[in-house]
Image (cartoon, rainbow, N blue to C red; front, side):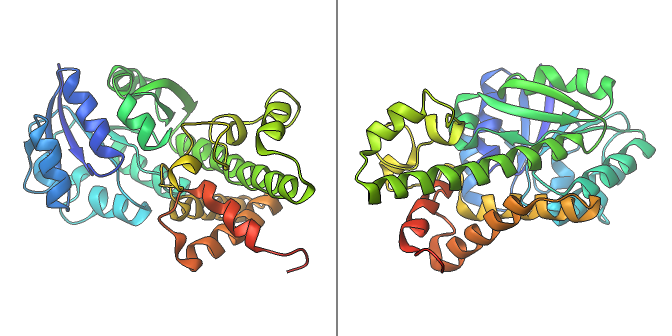
Length: 299
């Protein structure tokens, strides 16, 4: 079993850390939030006094942080992990951040004699709790081979997407599809309502026809057809509107850097920005259907 440091044990990192403990790994955990750290310690982890402390005496360090700047600070700062961890440490960053930062931090780690992969996830809190996450991994073959058995205790699908940064590239592309498709599915249900077509009837038809997609069949934005979807819990978040907006902004930034045309991503970002501005940042992103219901054609 491995000695692992885990930095960032909140909504996603907490259940991931607990799955590592269930698999028998020894864990040193750190989080700025005392209550979430206490939960992981209660599950068997040792509390670290700082991010730097979490990286001491371990073979592997996993980070799950909010944004690129946090990753930069934790890895490259004055007391950053790259300057303080033992040579040969394997870093696994499961944060969702911009591709450029992922590649910069990975290059710094390699120069310092460390191994590193970027391994953002898909599957939300439910997937983290059930250990069914999808990991999209960027980094060298050898680092991926070391990391894979660890990732398999937290996820069901592990895909090596290529060199450093490609995990983040896969994540922003995937979530571009997710954000745009959820809006399309929501628009279809709202139009169906206005046309007098029953929700279940539309679901029964489209889920078996060319309109079939994950946003419809696994995460349907109306109550009823998919009992496990947040629509049946008043849109209690599995993946918040604020997080979707963040990912769409990352996609837009990547498109800008590469001169790629992403008109749907841009429009989707505008809609989720409206949703966040309306006070629904913490609502599940599938709740965008309510924003669409409130809109009128031409406005």
